[in-house]
Image 1: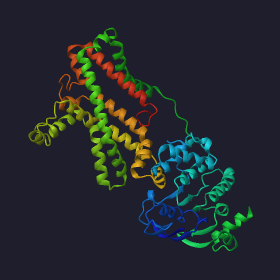
Image 2 (image 1 turned 30 degrees about the horizontal axis):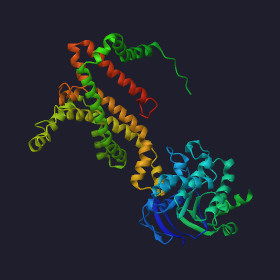
Image 3 (image 1 turned 60 degrees about the horizontal axis):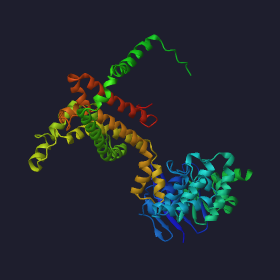
Image 4 (image 1 turned 45 degrees about the horizontal axis):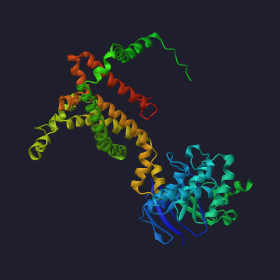
Amino acid sequence: MSLVAAFTAHRGAFALDIDLAVEPGRVLALLGPNGAGKSTALGVLAGTVEPDSASITLEGRVLDEVPTEARRIGVVFQDYLLFPHLSVLENVAFGPRSAGVPRREARVRAMEWLERLGVAEFARQRPEQLSGGQAQRVALARALAAEPELLLLDEPLAALDVEVRDEVRSELAHHLADWGGLTVVVTHSFEDVAALASDVIVLEKGAVTQRATVRDLVRDPATPYVRRLVSSWADD
Amino acid sequence: MARRSPLTPVLWIPAGLALGLLALPLVALAVRAPWGQLPELLSRVEVLQALGLSLGTALVSTLVSLLLGIPLAVVLARSAEWPAVPRRLLRALVTVPLVLPPVVGGVALLLLLGRRGLIGQPLNEIFGITIPFTTNAVVIAQVFVAMPFLVLAVEGAIRASDRRFDVAAATLGASRFTIFRRITLPLVAPGITAGALLCFTRSLGEFGATITFAGSFPGVTQTLPIATYLELQRDPDAAIALSLILMIVSVVVLVSLRDRWVPGITR
């Protein structure tokens, strides 16, 4: 079982044309500079951006005409989008409750996820009281508590201060491995790719310019953009 | 940054006059109020009747405004994506009652719902329903005048709220109804509260449209402001007492509005 998707979309003069596949236990990174179409691709997968044409199959289900709420695709947004009027616990319980789980049971499940991600102590707090790293873990807990069949991460470290980024990144890698489901990470940072992903699709100006495992990408970058990213990463 | 020049008397004098014009009448009301007779005045049957009618109709018209006004506010907020002509027309229709003299609103309501009105005549002939000069007419007049306040307050709150929270809720499997109930509505709740309070006070103070469309029958359509006006000719002390009640209610609402989100009204 896996994700297989091919779609085109446009935003004004910008055109995106991409096909991708993710196998179980693999984490795919969509790597590209700003404006390459990464977020649009993520939106098409999640069903929040209308594609020109699309063929998306997730775990044997054809999603082309399926609305966002029925896709079972979890998203960790760049700025997390934790609901400001709900407690951390209620944020995480939102997915189960939307699926019809009774309130008490949903809270129990939410608490389990918060414990798994090491943020249970903040259960009663409001999202605004959390640090960036804590908010990210809560957002991950919220997405996973809805039992998605695919997890999308949109620039998961971009909103964090530089000092904490490395630590949060390695924690995130740990949690993703722990979860083990199909995952797509959108990023413009090769640090993220190296730490989180097993496979990479490089997206430049709406088109795929390279697809490889992370190891092969480092060994043999296909475009100047990738070469620059890889060499500056290797210098660190 | 340029240093702000100190305020000159040229500015202070008219500003002080303006403030006096706004505040001194209320001071006069408080000073001349027959405080000693107040308990007696306020326990009179006709006063209690008018007070009860006013609070009751203002409450009902606020509820009606909430029920109809929130969906209208949603439509108005979404109309930002519409072509210019229908968008401006819709906004103009919502805003007109704010600038229209209430008496004109009352006349217009008579022409629509009166015994010979566009809708009132068939309503009367076919169903035997008469609207003008009834308590229902009081509520309709209040809704006409006060609902735009609620609609604009709620619309502002909707526009200010981030639609991406709705998207996030959808990715978690929430249906449209669940999203509206658990995300959209709570996020605009402060705007709804502020709009409802404004709507309530405006309803409570309604005079022109009410007396034109509903008349002034004690116990049926004679609300507090109308009773106040009529008492002023018969028993000025009673009128002052009634005014005090209206002023106190307004102040209470203003205080509870403080810190709530209504642009230009509380800040």
